[in-house]
Length: 156
View (cartoon, rainbow, N blue to C red):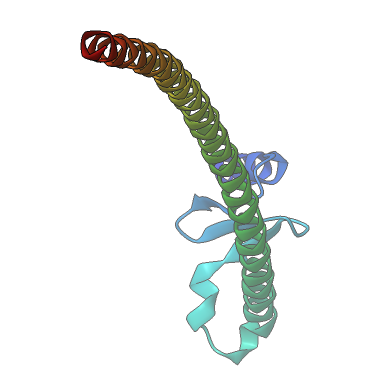
């Protein structure tokens, strides 16, 4: 490894990012493990370089573990976000529903008041009409009495 690669390697190791960093074409820094330097070119070499291959295998397992953990965390975050969105939507729907109920309740009360007013007006009209009917009956009765008396008086 030359000096430039070494500097890039150390920067990658010290980086706060948990994501694997490609330092060069054949060097990857895999995190969050102890930041191992991997020689990708060693994968196809013969069995004499088993330690490099085993380092690569360990790093790949760590990468799978890391990615699996990231996927789980991502799913948890998405589920939490979805729950929050559902809560917000439910709250909005509940608020809209309560507003509609309040509005309809007010309309119903005003309609009931209007009907009550109409009923009272009809009752008042019936009372007035029945008073007029009584007055007319009295008038008719008085006229019949006068007529009867006239006919009786003329007969006598």
